Image (cartoon, rainbow, N blue to C red):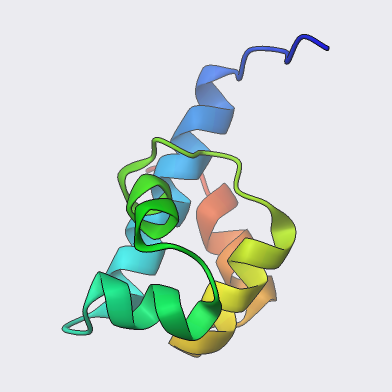
Length: 83
């Protein structure tokens, strides 16, 4: 099965998601947050840097829960177009 290439908008949305998660992580280590969410630190690193622009729903939900973020708010903020 061939995966359809992502559009520039989808890549930008992934970068915004990563930036939001990184900001919410604050001073906590990547390893600490990843472990608490049940994902690898490398997965979190890829999401935060935009190298994984379309992470699985349950991965995002787990990270949002650990970081105290609302999935609704995260979805809206990641989808906003830059001004």
